[in-house]
Image (cartoon, rainbow, N blue to C red; front, side, top):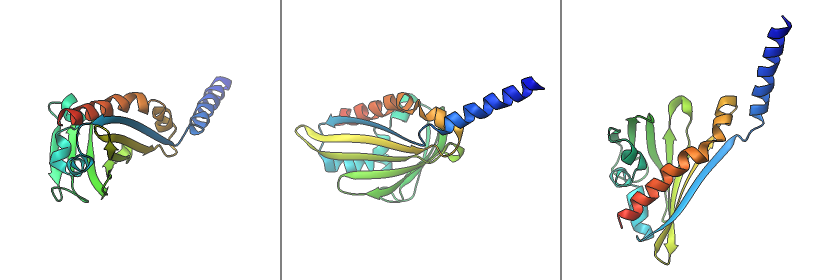
Amino acid sequence: MTIVYTILAAIALIALAALLLPRHVVVTRQMDVEMAPEDVIARVASTEGFQSFNPYCTRDANLKITPFGPEAGVGSGFRFEGKEGKGTQTVTAVSATKVTHLIDLGAMGKPVQTIEAKPSATGAQVTWTVKSDMGYNAVFRIFGLFMDRMLGGTYELGLKNLASLA
């Protein structure tokens, strides 16, 4: 019986330690592209435009994209289903320099993604950021430690895809 209590205590200690990890995780990548900032924003705010540089389309040739809502602007978005998961991405705000998307991954959470374009010497400095709330789930918080390594390369690919459109 002592072994069972020891194992349960160890599990509880690991779970408690995991809850001390950061709840909020931010992944950011940045690149200069030879495109006017307003052209970047117009592309990002459009479901069709976003698909032209979507890194997940590059990585998954069988990714299924189903648009919904208006073609562009607040409320536009798409459903996706592929080898890396399924969910929706919806434009929730558009300004002259930034587009915000809510990504709904169901039980995996609802990260908020922003793509910002500011003038630079070569066109636009584009910053792609995703913010995730890992909540009180110990497993998600452990997973959060690896988010930058897991998503960073994907956002770098998306920025390269966007730069190649210039």
